[in-house]
Length: 182
Image 1: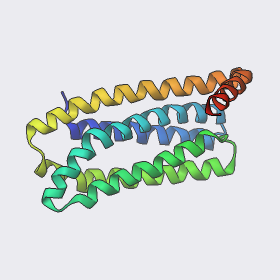
Image 2 (image 1 turned 90 degrees about the vertical axis):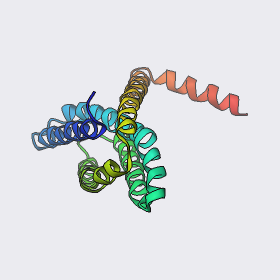
Image 3 (image 1 turned 60 degrees about the vertical axis):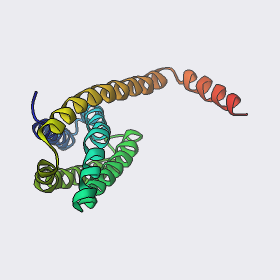
Image 4 (image 1 turned 180 degrees about the horizontal axis):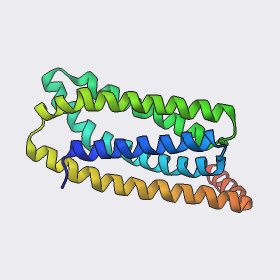
């Protein structure tokens, strides 16, 4: 199995390629393809971030607390939170909108910053703080969690598509939810 650092770097490169493809689509006014690629980006980023928070950042916070470097771990988690907010906003917009184009650019910049800090600062520190056994366990857990979250995100995207295809299903869903809350 690849090291946790190689695994995370591979994810980073895949996300960078998706951003490049989305930018190319926007430049060519291929908005439907940009939205399709965005769905893939959302799945990849969400699965990566959720798994990374649970299986990499949590043990990193513990190790960092003992080594007085806890801020690095907290900052990475906060960057994930901002990414999630932008992903959710972008999901409710159309790629033709100027605001969508601006938000996708900001998301790309945040991800680039996050990747630079992780690879340049966090990984070197983590290598000092984690044992080889911990790194192997984190890599294994990371892959399992990513697979789990990818599946969940894909299911959620399918549900959104189903609601778009059958708008009455959404109304029934909301009315039954409302009735249960009363």
